Image 1 (spheres, rainbow, N blue to C red):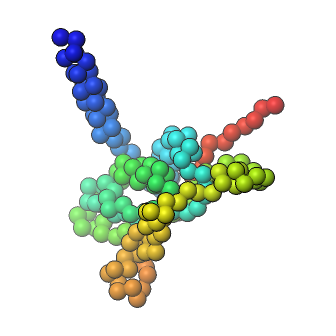
Image 2 (cartoon, one colour):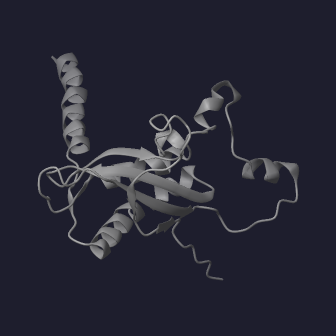
Length: 186
């Protein structure tokens, strides 16, 4: 009988975890300021885990649509790396709900530029080992996960026969995300 109980425990635990993961909090957004504040606070709540995996800075562009119900869909990021940060940004954006518009009026794209800075304190390397720690690890067996010539289709070059790189979109104000501040008290 003990054997059966031990088999059921992981199944019960997994069922609770899957409900927790699938229950995504919806961020109701009514204006630009509210969107920026909710977006930043949601990303900031995961900033510690992002800081462990992302040790760089740069700019990402997120292209998306808003459907007739006000939900964000068709999210595309301009880059492939850093994966951890991109996943958090996409999940956060997908959880946003805007006021619904008239049917068929939300057919334009929105582009959200995100500046990120997860660099640690500036430390000048003095040894080859320190320099190696600062260098991103690139898997040469899967170089396509790093090289991104068409920005993941952000500019829809396949539809314009590569003669024009651009889309009809609303360019949103840039959002800045960064690692938590660390204060050293001595």
